[in-house]
Length: 286
Ligand code: PXG
Image (cartoon, rainbow, N blue to C red; front, side):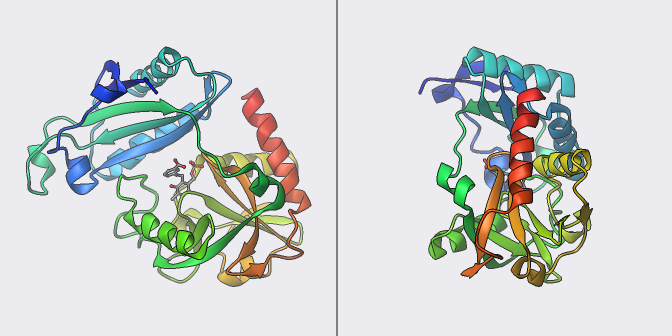
């Protein structure tokens, strides 16, 4: 489909939206990105996404050559020119064109682009009946390597885990951290419900601080559903009453099976249902 892409301040046809082969984003995965949703013409949690983008860039000592206001305007401009009211946005900042060799000092100007497209979701049936996941053999990156809190262009670890999910015939894989505790899935945060309490790993467990995760924690507060961020072990998922994943693409999706084991009754639980409903209400009102 013909679509405009915003790239370094210009709106160009998607077929003309190109990066240099010398871009360190391509050569080394040197860059950061955000996946964002537009609901009813509004960029959902815009400030939170931009804050995370700048924080990720900062962690990589990558200076974004635009202000947050300029990037927000670029997103709205791209959404509008493509005639979307509901869509997915991919906002990317790379180290820019340099030369062969790792050092970013050879890259004078970061490249920034914004793509809008229709959103690819899990099949509707999974939202109603729940999805099956597996635990990947791949470990989530150690926080002293590329920090999981950075949404970087290097997703190889997650891609390896996703391949394991594909091989097992399921849609997502859970990654454990370097200590063997629960971290998150390849593109989604994980939650469990045990004895009426919603639980999710803390940022120090080596996760991306998902925007959807924050919205769910906020909604729990609003609905007076007890919730806590704490270290979880595999046991906590096996013994959970309910389990669900959150992410910009997936929104809130129930998990009813892990590693071939049914979670509790294998049905979508009542708290998960309440939160799915509250989330839908929230994106309509935001
Ligand atoms: N953990 C990881 C590792 C992620 O990549 C999330 C959690 C959820 O975060 P948000 O802010 O979306 O609630 C993500 C989300 C996609 C896609 O197109 C999504 C993500 C990464 C790559 C692709 O579905 N990230």
